[in-house]
Length: 163
Image: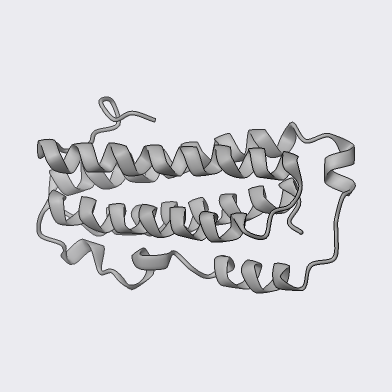
């Protein structure tokens, strides 16, 4: 079904979409706490892009060559290419608190986790399953970090935010 290469392409596209939304919003907010939180979220998405790109670079030639026919593949790629899930419809600069922004980001991360879990039902190759589990762990970690910031009523900052 899906190859490791394709899973990583999807993951990278999702992270790029999220980063673009956060960076765009960052350019349009005046509140320093919101700007700090947006910067942290965008930087964290960029770090995920880097992580997934490194995983992709490390693929063997054999893993890259395995391209099984899969009709749903184009469907998933089309969905991901233009989607940011819940972020795409948000007017982030109009959010009035960091907590509201973090709740929105948390919803986006949870949607991403659900997407990868759904994708996992189509993954047959053991190597691709391992990579997908790693991607899911990254996203689940992001969910936990956001939940912690919300619970503790903290503003995530680049220098203090986990990656």
